[in-house]
Image (cartoon, rainbow, N blue to C red):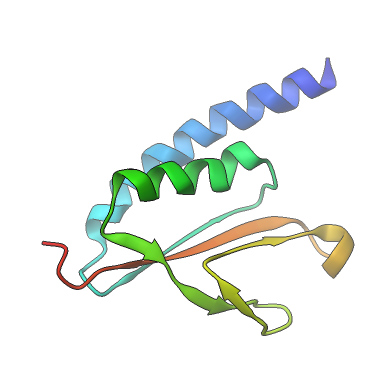
Length: 102
């Protein structure tokens, strides 16, 4: 029963996050950056939101950034695992909007 509640919770919030990402992407200027970050490690709420967004919005691409904890280079998305960093888990994706997208 507990796993079923987690799955239901994950699906509910993933849909809301998808709606927010698609709404706010219109406010990113060409050449601008969009950061998607959630305090969740569920695949449905992380890469499961970002990958369909990228397929639908071809003007956005993964953007390299530094891991905020250890400053290592990250190729577009990062899971921060509690067992690795002794902190709450989270997911971060950084997306670049191409300059000629309008």
